[in-house]
Image 1 (spheres, one colour):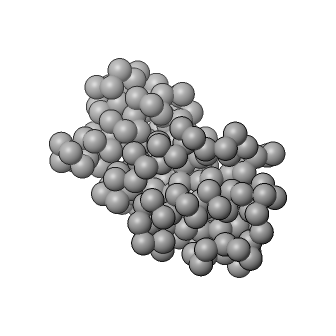
Image 2: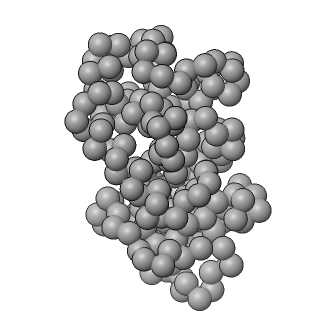
Length: 186
């Protein structure tokens, strides 16, 4: 779907592809391998980012954990391990203490993680994510926003594979290699 009002991107020159997800969402967890495969062959001008969907206070701790890990440069130690812990091991990691303990279990400095989790930077990022979810019109996850202009998702396209085709097409459109008129109906 084309957004009524394009939103500014954070990517500068490239085409921003933004995955909107929640750690508690099984569909988001199952999308990760597809995203990884796509990233391995994505065009060089793609600037891929992730943004946790903050629909309310219940999911805020996970969003804080994501941004804390990002700021500390340890996303790889937290992102998939947290997804796996929640969905494969059915662990209950939903509040600050549980998240700090989990981070420590992944070899992340717990005190530093807690400090970052409660930092001004993370507060700001969480508030922005809350705001952007509304601006992007995201009412379910996973969703992918291409260059602040288009929103797609596996449920919109019918499958994860089909969604990747739509993303590739929209990246082409935004790179000036294809016209939007030819876009498959999103």
